[in-house]
Length: 72
Image (cartoon, rainbow, N blue to C red; front, top):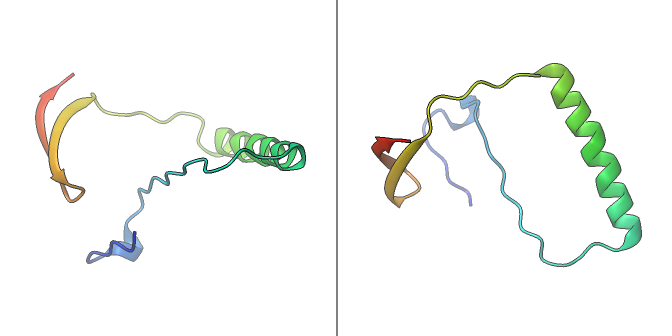
């Protein structure tokens, strides 16, 4: 998306979205599951608990500003 802002390289929170555009073949599926399991185990070891704040219902016109309308 190439969205850049001041301090972009120092920003520590990031979410990556991916969309399946074709089905994986059997070999790719096994490789994916093995990699997923290894990454999941490492994340669970390094950061077992992630505490989030209260969910919010927001309105947005673009991906740069989210206006909180209410807490859920």
